[in-house]
Image (cartoon, rainbow, N blue to C red; front, side, top):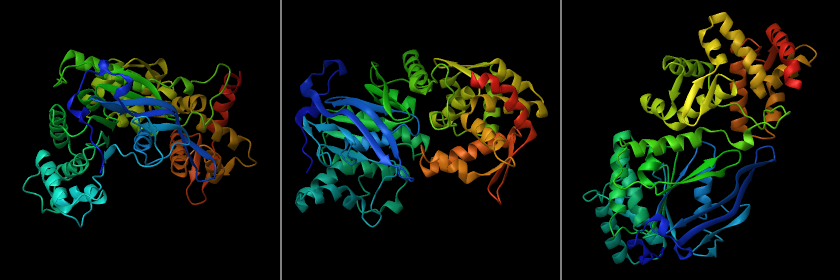
Length: 459
């Protein structure tokens, strides 16, 4: 059974911590995995963090930043390639005995009833049948599922199934409750209700855990729940910022202080990592500067919206206005910045002169503007154009570029990079793609643009 400390009843200010409050620590954690082609994929780099008694910590980041890998590493489900994870000062060599997990996908056993699902961890820990049943029933009541003990997962709504997940974790009375995007699979209202109920339970002295750690990509969720937010940067994942949330509970998302905190986190999350900026005099490459997963149509719609806001927009307000999550909006922001269509200062986005030029151009001219910007600023598009120029007949199979991309990406990400580059290049009429033969074929437009820009790019 996971031991529960009496510390959970003494929640304290995040500023009042001492070294004795540390529950889980990551020290110089680096995590890598072998890629499909035998190379190494670096997921986490030099992560140092501590989870302490009496606090809620949110790990916030874009898709691909390593949030879930970090959470599973802290839980002892993934062994770091280097560095260490400690629980109450002892280095982990397996699953963390002080942690219980709640997953996005609910992860319930469909052939077991609600009561049997909640009892699973206790059964594995060897708790007697009588104690197991008593504790499981208490957890079911605490999480608001009384009357559904005999129901099966297929008979429950998504929100009720996630409640079972919470009850199954809390019945273990863990030191740390870890949650991986626990509300993202639910509709907005159900997620909001469940989140509010969880925070009400957290405020009670009898809540059976000492610390909560939640992985999320939702900035408002992080501000609503957390005492501290750790913002992860990408490529590989690293802690970009640690931001305390010093707002009283319950938190009002309409208050100016709440909105200011959302703006601050959005600005940190939207900012490019310093490591991603090209060194002076260097030309970014396709492995170091991947193409954001954004379509030309999506970019056109995004620049149209910013244009309609007088050429500038507050990104958090825009995301809220469009009912976007940050993962939906950020690829468009990153792509617009890469192509020079947009500049971002803090949480404010501004159309550049090139952004206005592309948006206001007619159909034919807009293709030419986009082609020019893609060759100048999108490394993979430029690489494809130059490779085709250097081939005998201006044509190469897509396998050539896919094999090169596999040196730095997983097979899935390499294909996404190639698909994006093909779409961007075809829109700009830089090259065409024959799906039957898998060949990319250079156009006359590409040669002219490459020649025009070649001097600037090589300086």
